[in-house]
Length: 115
Image (cartoon, rainbow, N blue to C red; front, top):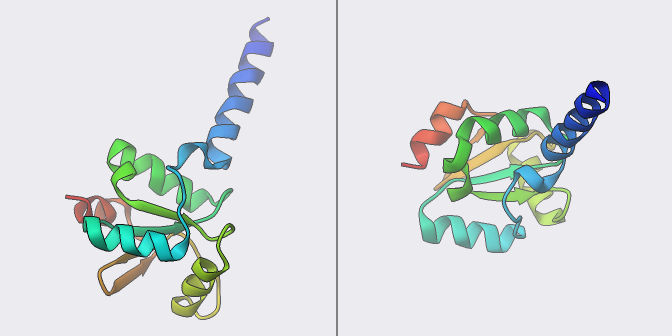
């Protein structure tokens, strides 16, 4: 019984961490840019299964919900924007704040941008 409970807990943890459940609803690139600009918050490009994205999301905690999260797997324009600033690579998380971008930034830097 205990091993079944542990297995279920592990499976649920993986589901939450490796799927969009841990992330807010993902708008498309155009809508995400507009939302981030209007609200003055970071625009974070991510993709499911990315351990660095998961680390960033979990490190930000509830404050991370204020940022705009765009899934590059759901929007080819978002993937193209990420490639345009990462030497053709779809390296995520890529975070835009105003005209500045950072690839795989420290969670503390992103948190500062949310204040």
